[in-house]
Amino acid sequence: MRDRMTGYSPRPVPGVTPAERIMVTTRTPMCDGGSVALGHPRVALRIEGGSVTCPYCSRTFVLAEGAGHDGDH
Image (cartoon, rainbow, N blue to C red; front, side, top):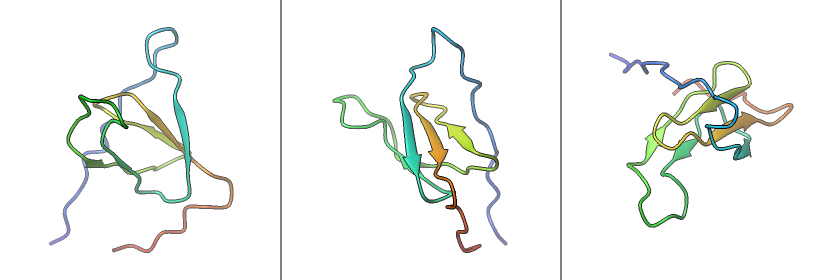
């Protein structure tokens, strides 16, 4: 049976959420908090629309135009 992702993603809040936006070419980017000393566990995110925000560090991953035709496995 295939695992299902929760689809949880915090909503960015202007002035509170970091404005870091990372362009990606895959609908399933991985995030570990970046190169900071206190990152977070590496998590797989799923871009359903055009972007997804990491629930740990609030980095926003934006799907590059013309990208996102990942296989379903």
